[in-house]
Length: 335
Image 1 (tube, rainbow, N blue to C red):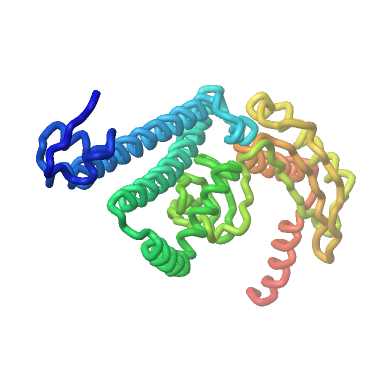
Image 2: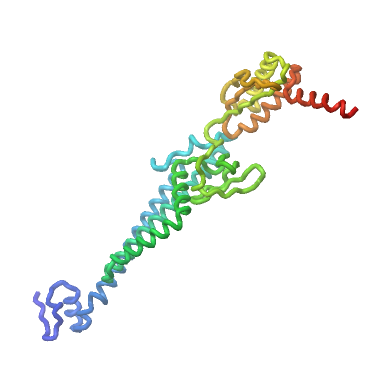
């Protein structure tokens, strides 16, 4: 099909298939045909860029959400390490499942939020550069200025970047989670919230600590897998070590056989014997392997039974000797 041009047709209309030629053939308006690229083509391309960018962002965010949801349900991808071997053994399967769900849910939400934010910023940055390129804007100076600004912000926000990166690695490695009892130095207590930048810890006195993830150099987690109650019993200087040892072993064995505590004791109590000799005390060590969440309750019960067993066996502790000698020293002064 031949296309005929009027005498005043713009030069660009001679190129078949171009926007200029199409507009000229449809309208026969020279100025509209000459400006067709700026008025029609460029806006359409910008709209297409925005639509494609938003569509890609939506698809990626949905994939991230599905991945995090699958992780919460225990069937997540391999990049997220499973939680099961790191969750403390609780009193019941229902409690264990509830804590497991809380840990997975909070971890997945935090990681998912971070990933979605990174994806959104990346896509928006590419979209902005493509739009500027369509407007014939020279991107060289802009990229150079953005690099300088980014460098300045990087120096000014080193602590923030450090906290966020530390939080990401901590979450990926599952170093601790909600419900864990951890020791991060000055703050020792139960983890209540695990964030990308801040971890909140409730200590024994009820104070809530806000700890920046970048400031956590080492973490002692008392709630993963199993734990041990290490009890060093101070015996009096004149105490019979054999009698005391038998009493301590008997107390630990009875505790392990007690139905109230037997489910939380994982191995036979280990009475190691005398581990320290002092001028005023001899220390006898016994170790009990327990579930991580019940080590403090087992420790309290063990101390009580050991104390009772020593008194029944007539073995004086170092504390008894100290009180006795203190009383002797005070008697002349009181007289």
